[in-house]
Length: 279
Image (cartoon, rainbow, N blue to C red; front, side, top):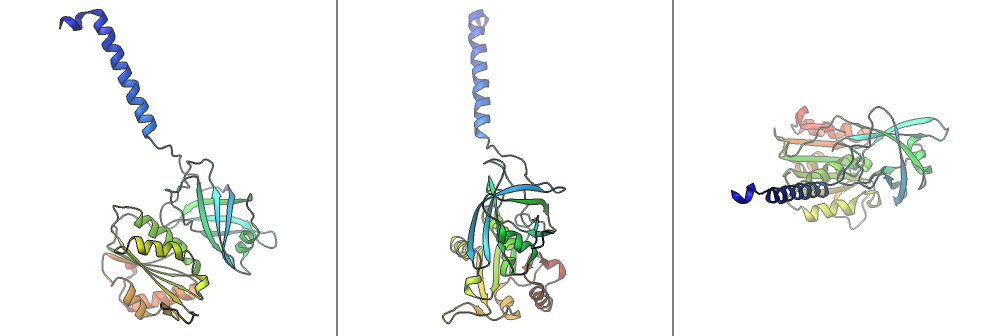
């Protein structure tokens, strides 16, 4: 006690406490990851710069857009999409929803995979876009609400560019070590060259064999094709999607005729309305 009563002792103790406080503040500051709030605005369009365009096949390209800073996040909940604004071939404004294939774990940028149809109005805008151009985007929007382990198993049926919302959800599930949801995807296209994100999907199947599997279906398959042929059938759904149950859900996304056909198959197989969702 005599030591603590000396003025010089109290002085040194005060300095030590101050240094410890400063050290703790420095540790907290540098241990925090710098991450900004969402870049999206649900009420107004914001402009994002195209920094990289990669042609995936004759009518599909991947577009990478830059966010304001290297640590910015788009702020898009898994299973949601954005609305993009562009000009058609007559110079008139056109709006269309797209689902980024990136998550908020991808900081500083977001990516869209876009199929450009010959007569598509928004397709014209993307076909004309060059690196350095800007895209008007607002959001997020969407009815699908995702949370980890909300179902035991998830079935997915996608056609063509309808893979993009599925891909986003698959990434969200597989990249979350706490999420044990099992995912089975049936992905239909016309030809082998039309299959989008195949390398990434096959990578998921290889890395997470107990949690993700994909079955490709082609209406015009090559001679050595070992996947499904023709249209997605009721038998394919029975074989590759989880059976109807209270803890199962099946998502679908594709051209309207395909969506209607899949809904009829799912109804016939006993999937109740609350077990189905259409993007």
